[in-house]
Length: 156
Image 1: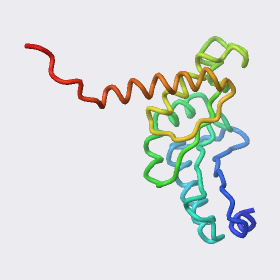
Image 2 (image 1 turned 45 degrees about the horizontal axis):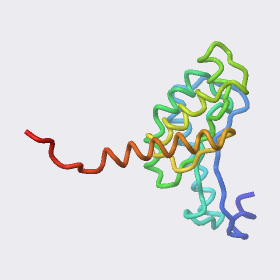
Image 3 (image 1 turned 30 degrees about the vertical axis):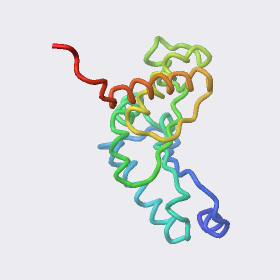
């Protein structure tokens, strides 16, 4: 697949995936190693680094603890120099953290994880509930931008 992508010059998302949760010393280290290996394959296949997005694969063969560790470690993946994509919308982990809410009742958790990803510098979100997530991103961005703005000095 890498050779075909390289020949056609199309963008690609490299996503970490395990078919079942396997014991690991550090999911973050495992995913970092996977990304480095995959980026090496992509380079050999002639895929431009500008065409590559990395997705840590939240929910794909990972335990709840691993997913939580992964979300908290998202900023570390910026060291790889590629845009990051997170698709945590309606994931089972939200159900596990909210008394097993069914997928269609996971909006609050989905928006929370989207905002957490934005705080971590993630550039792309894959979501189910687009208008609600866009609203949350606009509010988050407004608060971030206001925090970066100098509103002047308060009167003494």
